[in-house]
Length: 292
Ligand code: SF4
Image 1: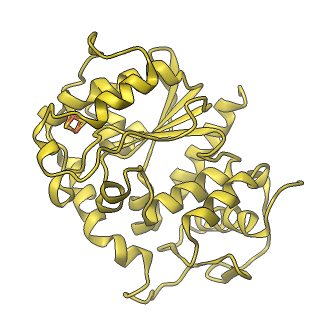
Image 2 (image 1 turned 180 degrees about the vertical axis):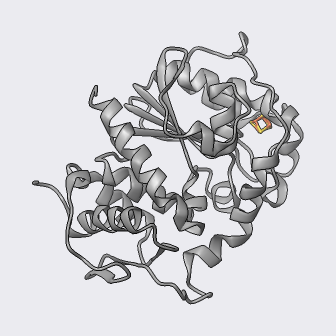
């Protein structure tokens, strides 16, 4: 159990409790990205932890951060409240139209840096007119796991990196629970590289234009496993139009690479009912990575 921080262990324990008890919202504050990544680096072997802590307790580590659960979060600081508008937009995507599954563009370069440069200057679709930055990817191109999200939000558009807001920090903690970190073992990209205005749903033609970048990224990174988070990524990579609830919990194959689908971390933060399935999906992910 060496190399494990107390807070990372508490995160795993807390999620296990919420999964078992099917509790309400999760509220995470006081943990910045650097701290979350630090926990992720030290989070190996955490997934097997269990403990007797009572649900709803406050978990603190001095000079690090706070993870707490509450049935009555402060609306000014609650992660659920902070994400509410964005999550509501995402939750409407259960009713989105079927998307074109796209195809690999033979014109895209086989060199990773050249592909990235091409994407950073891309004007293939209307989103180039409203974005601030193209959000290409984050993490290691040598990663074992590739996480695929949907599209950049405001924080990502401002920073140029995927999953850097509250949901991103939570994703880092979820990955830490199964011993993974974006700095060492995870590569993260989105279906769309540019932010849809107002966080509206991606449109079919935008996905058709942009998905070749993602397919080429997968081809070049060659991850051992792909984890699609959210409805759009799940549908695109499985090539189906099923709801996310039906897609999760199975191991698919994308061009021979094992593919799992789970809920978007922002959706999980909003709706505690999905804690158990996400926890189960993370265990399945760990099992696949371990060759189980
Ligand atoms: S969303 Fe994709 S296809 Fe559209 S401009 Fe951005 S990088 Fe190009």
